[in-house]
Image (cartoon, rainbow, N blue to C red; front, side):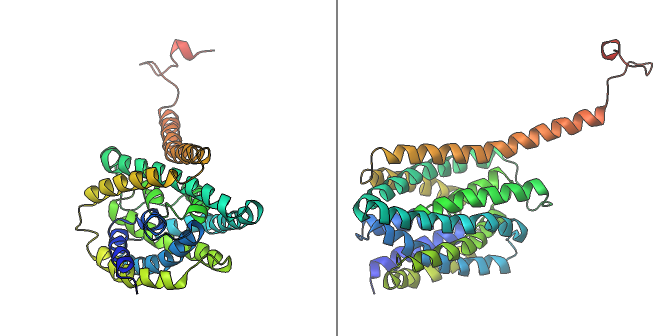
Length: 315
C-alpha cells in the first residue's frame, strides 16, 4: 500500500463527491508527474478506478434524488460508444507509431485538454454561475435528447483518449445547455460518468492499460472520499472549489504540455475550445431563435386600430 496515493485518492474522491469534477483531470497528471506512471497506463488505471469511485457516488446521489435519469441515459447513449472509439484510437496509434511517440502525443493531448478544461472551469465558477438562470428539472424534449447525445459523443471520445473531463466538461455543459441547478448537475454528472467510465475502463482493461495494484491503492482512499464528498455536496462552498480546481487544472496543463509534442498540444487545446464553445453556444442560439419565432407566430401580422392590415403589409 502506498500511503501517498491513498491520501491523494481520498482528496480527489471528496472533490468528485462534492462537485462532480476533478477525477481524471487531476489524478492522471498526478500519476504521471509525481509517481512516474507511463501516460497510457495512467489514463487506463485512472479511468478504471474512477468507474468504481463514481459508481459509489452515483448510487449515493441517486438515493438523494439529485440525478436527472433521462438526461444521464441519453448522454450515455452517445458517450459509451465514443469512449470505446477513443480507447481503440489509442491502441491503433500505439501499434502504428510506437510507445515513445505515443507518450509524447498523449502528453500533448492531455495537456491541451487540461488547459482548456481549466479555463472553462474558471469561466464556470466566475462567470457562468452569475449569467445562467438555473432550474431543478425540465421536460425532456427531442432537442434536449439530441443535445445530450451530441455532448456525450464529443466528450466521451476525448475521455477515452485522455481520461480528462468526465466531470468537469460535462458539468459545465449541463449548466450552460440545460441550466440545471448545482445539486442536479453534480448528481446527474456523477451518475452518467459511472456508466461512461465503466465502458472506457473495460476497454482499457482489454487493451492491457490498467494497473490493478495501483487502482486498488487509489480506491482505498477515493471510495470513502467520494461518500464523504457526496454527503457535504449541498453544504460545501462549490464556487471556491471550482475556482481552485480551475487554477490547478491550468497549472497541471502547463506542466504536462512541456512533456508533449509542441505541435499537437496547441491543436488539441484549440479543437477542445472550439468544440466546447459550439456545444455551449449553439443550444442557446437555437433556443433564442425558437423563442423569437414563437413570439412572431403569437403576434400574427400587424394590424391598425380599425382591425385592417397596416398599409406596409398590404401587397
